[in-house]
Length: 119
Length: 142
Image (cartoon, rainbow over all chains, first blue to last red; front, side, top):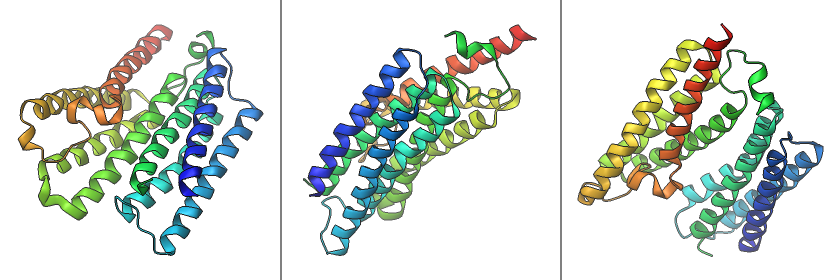
């Protein structure tokens, strides 16, 4: 369950990065649709955080330690919202690049999460 | 390219600066949380490596703060810190390659930041470029 969600979140994060990267390439700021996309990815990361905590509460142990696992879950949940607010403040192509970078960073975090959980 | 240079307030976070702040912010969280965890749980294993990661995190935090704060003094301070950061990455990166035994565990700056997709070595280069360009633009506008 958690592994599947990790993969889905990573893939959607990369799609978001490509989409925002395309906007940057066309010299456009992020628009409403991009923010809806960011909301979807953020929601996935938030659900992942909840499920991860539930798994821990059930007594399951991440392979590389609980503290690191929780830290990465929190980081993953905060990643795209933070980049989204920054792209809201920067209404140029560079805001789009920042949002795209947020997606890439989230994808990297998901890969690490996969390892930490021991999937 | 046109939209970026038209208005330039004192802020250093307009245009490409925003992307820099994002990456510096990520590195602050990454380096600091990592070193806090390592120092709290297993400091004796590789004290040098963990202390260097903590130092890297503090340098990143200061640069991020300077970029957000803006203004000429903050720009100069950030410039100095980026140069120090670049020197740190190069020195520690070379050190880890020449004398791996000094580092039982890796640091943020090990192998020139390979564990972080070489962002630690690319970031100060782009930041130095950006900070110098902001100065040139300011001077040009009077």
